[in-house]
Length: 168
Image 1: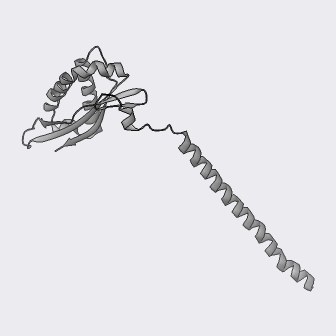
Image 2: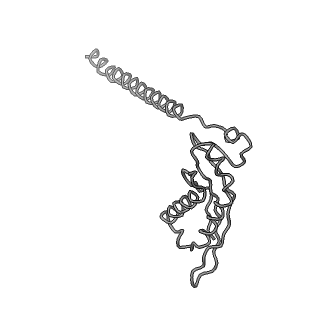
């Protein structure tokens, strides 16, 4: 009888050890898979070029983004058109132009005064309510893109990038 009691008491101890090994093994596999996934995720992203190296040459305000070039315009501060019963509002806007290649960028540089003028004329007619919500900002972006492409025709800007929009 004593032998049977020893076997029964020893049996739970033997079952507990394999469960512990299974839990530790499963945790180690989860950690290894998580580390491998993180490694592949971080190593698969393309390396980011240094902005100073991308803006090399004598093109001030120019940087490359992938296969496009970014041309930074100076910040613009304009009075918005006042609505009845509301006080005067101001808008500070910093915009960058995205062009397809360096040749296009060099072609549009002499026309930047026309671009800034077209932007200023349009922005002064805006009201604060025209800029409300994401739809207002989208309309602003599309209208500025249309105006810049008219001002620099036959060259073409791919996209308008907002760096800063501040309405007070």
